[in-house]
Image (cartoon, rainbow, N blue to C red; front, side, top):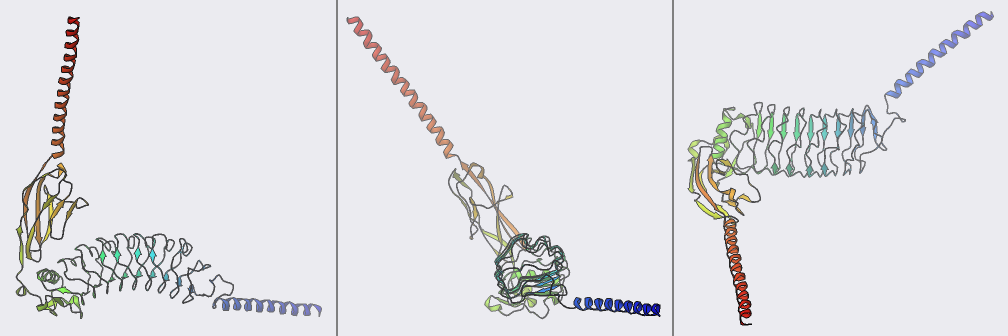
Length: 432
């Protein structure tokens, strides 16, 4: 009997242990489905499922105690002005960082250090004016970068360095005027580039070179007048090009651009439904780029109408050489010396009227100068010879000759005085 009671008690204890284990497992599972009250989480933020949500909390800095396994960090709608160095160093699992609608003004190359797995970075609606080269160099896995609605005016070469996996770059509604050559050249995976509503007025021939995967390019609502022929030739994957709402000029230059574009897109369907209309000249206002033909213009190669003259100048003086050319498209004028293109600087300058001015001329400035006028229909050049006379050296030689003359006169005078004194002494001795 005692043994039977013992067996029942043992069975009951076993069942109780099993029940407790099951209850414990159930509790652990339930807790895993909800944010842990004991887990690490920034004050007032919500942390769950690998995400940290600090939306519109009026934060003025990146918060502390962000879990190191965070995959998504939402900080939009705050008052953050500066990103402190090292604040993201431990967030090596982060894939999505949203900093939209803050007050960030500047980006540098150490702010995002540590985010080696980041795929998406949103920095729109801030006050960013300056982006230092290599600011995103640590973001080697970045695929989407949005910088819309900021105050960026200048894109320096190297600013997007090391972003070979970037697929989408959005810079809409900034104040971009200048884009250095080569800014986009390393973005070999880029598919979407948005530059809408900026102040871009000039496109460089090499600006989009290397973007072989680019599918959509938006340059609408800018200040572009002329487009270099062949600028989009390397964009072999391009399906949509938006150039609408630019003050385009209907002239030979843009006709040549359209003809070059037709080689890859015979129907010009690359413009899609966004028709690009000319604004200038007035008589061709509202005319579509698609409709431009050779019959609309009388395009001519360059003709130099003011040629540089042969000149002789003195060392230290200023050299001016004039050159003027006509043609349609308007020719580009460059200067060369002894068949080497001149490097412009503080002493060597070319003014808007294409006049070459060299201040404080040196002997090495002498030689054969060439004015070269070029447009897409041809090239014409004129040469002039510049001789430099060494006034300073000749003056030195003259002065040296005068000095020798005065020394010679002084020697004669000394001899005469010596002779006079000697003669007087001798005469006095004889009298005595």
